[in-house]
Amino acid sequence: MENPAKAKEGLQDILNQREYQIYYEDNRNFLEVWWDNIKAWFRELLSEWLSGFEPSNGFADTLLVILIGVVILLALLGVFLGMRLVRRKRALQDHQPFQSMNEMEWSVERHLKEAEKQERTRDYSLATRHQFLAVLLYFHEQEWLQAHVWKTNWDYFAELQRKDKQRAEAFYELARIFDEAVYGKRPIAEKEYHNYQEKALKWLHETGEKGIQEN
Image 1 (cartoon, rainbow, N blue to C red):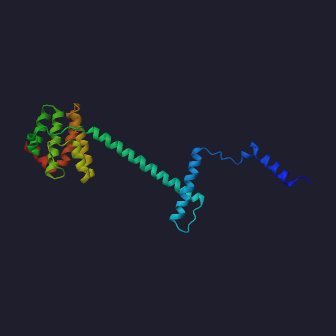
Image 2 (cartoon, rainbow, N blue to C red; image 1 turned 60 degrees about the horizontal axis):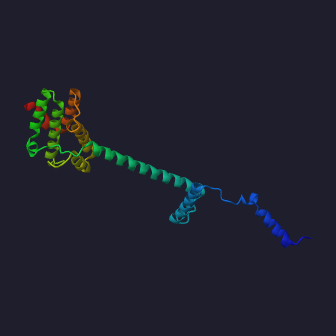
Image 3 (cartoon, one colour; image 1 turned 30 degrees about the horizontal axis):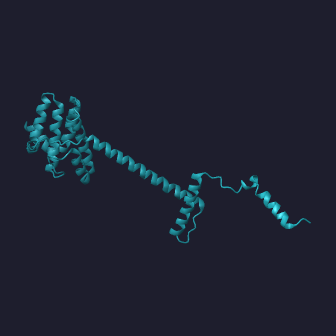
């Protein structure tokens, strides 16, 4: 009978050959190895958190996929909100709506009268400006914000957003068109002006209506 030691050595030589060793090699790529390690780590974490509970591979894997999906969605939401904030800040340019202390000392009614005067001359951009300043002063009178000559529309928007997001959104739309008309030199057509005026007067309530009636 052949020596058992030689037979064992011969068998080992056969098993060491490439066609046999290939079955024992890890053929996973980097991502597969990384994903399997993450799943193993997560299953261990679940076992530690839920004492006495041994999560099945399928349960742990499904829960891990859901959590990763939630994290990705939250990250995308954060990016979207961040980009939206940047775009809005660019839309509200770094200009002060009040050009002098004298304009701040005007009453809401006086700005509305000036807006109507400019409307009659068909200078709708300037009429838009005074409509907006009337709204801004009205917000100041209601103590929804604090108006100052040095403040920009972005400062006012940020101040309003801390207190009332709905009011801040309405202000943003009025301020955006104001900036486009006054600083962007974008012509305002008659129809657009009347739409703007309607939105402004919704916030002015009786103050705005009274100013127009007294003119």
